[in-house]
Length: 521
Image (cartoon, rainbow, N blue to C red):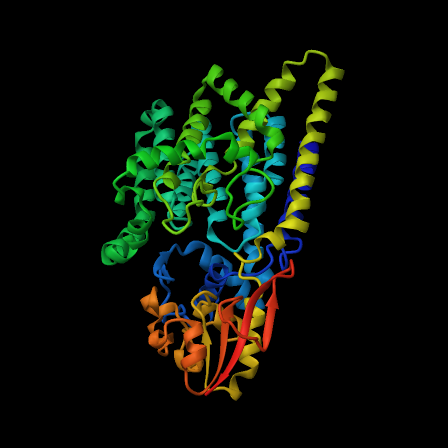
C-alpha cells in the first residue's frame, strides 16, 4: 500500500509539473476566451457583478452565449487575489488536470487491481488530450474529474450500498451540468447506462435510489429555472451549431460520429486546427495496439463494468457529432466538444496492457515486456513534449492572438495624442481583453472608460453596443485609414492596409502579426 501511494504521489507531482511549467509561453499567448473566464470570476468576487453588471449570475453572458458558472467561480479566485496573468488564468486548469489523474486511479481501482489503476493513472498523466487542455484557461477540463467522481462514487455504492456514496455520485453528476455544456447530454447517457447495467442493485435499494434522484433533481433546478427565463438566449448557441438545422443533418451527424471514433483522430493526427492539435492524436499513438487489445478484452469478458466502459466509448462522440462550425470546415472531429471521453482511451489501454502482460507466462519476459512498453510510452511522450515546447508555440501563434497584448499596450500608451484608436474587425479584440491588457480592474465594463476606442464587436455581439463608437461608419480598417477625419491610430491585421505602419508586431516565426498605422486629416 505504501508502495502504491509513493508511485501515485510521484505521478501526481510529475503530472502537475507537466501541466504547470511554462504556462506563460505555452500556449504562446492568452486569448479572449481565457480572459473572459477569469475576468468575470474576479469581477464577481471584487464587486458582486460580472462585466455586464449582472449580480452573482448563475450562468454568465459571454460573447453572445451563456457560459456555465462552475469554472468561472473557481478560476476567479486565483485572479482575485493575484491579478490576471498567464499563471492565474491557466493554473486552475492545471490543477484540475492533475486531479483527473488521481480520480482516474480511484475509478479504475474501484473495478480492477492496483496495477491496472496505476498504469491508467500513469497514462493519464502524459495524455496529450489531458495535458493540452490542462494548460489552457477553459472550463472544459473541469468535466473530467467530476465525471470520474460520479463513476467512482457509484461503483463504491454498488459494493457497500451506503447512501452517502450514491449521494456523492448524484452530486458529481449534478455539478457536471454547471461545468461544460456537453455534460447535459453526456452525463445523462452515462448515468442511464449505470442504472441499466446495475439495475438489480438499484432495485434492491429503492429508497436510496429515490433519494439520489431527488438530490440530482435539486442540482438541476437552478439550471432549469434560468433556462425557463432565458430559453431563447440560452438556446441561441445550440441553434447556431446544431447539425439538425441543416438539410443533411442526420447524414452529417453519422459521418462526424465515426470520425470521432477513428484511430486517425484518437491516436494518430487529431484535429488539424492548431488551437487543438499537438504532434499526434488525443492519446499517445504507441497505445493504439493496447487500446484495441483492451477493447477485445472488454468485449470477451463482458462484466458489468466492461459494459459501462463500452457504453462510454460508443456514446462519448455523440454530443460533439451533433454540432458543426459553419466557419471552420476542419472543426470536426472536435477534441474540445468530445472532452467527455477523457480519460477513457488511457483506461482501456491500461486494461489492454495488463491483459497482454498477464498472457506472458515467463516472469522475466513479462518484466522485459513491461519495461519495453514503458520505454515506448516515455519516448512517445517526449516526442509530444518536444513539439509542444519547441514547435507548437510558433505554429499556433495566430490562433492564440499572439502579439495582441503588445499592440494594445502600445496604442494605449499613445492614446492621449490621438482622437481615436480604431481596431480592425480582423484583429478580434474583445472588450474584456482590452480591459485586461490596459490594467482595467475587474468589474462591470464602462464604455466611457474606453471612449477613444472604436471596436467592431457590436456588429456580431450586440451586448457590446456601447463599445461601437461608430465603427460601421467606414466598415473596414483600410477605409478608416483613408477616410476618417482627425488624428487616429489604427490597429490592423498584417497586410490589411497598404501603407507603412508606425509599428509592426511579429509572430515567433518572424512573420508579421499586427500593424499599427497613424492617420491625420
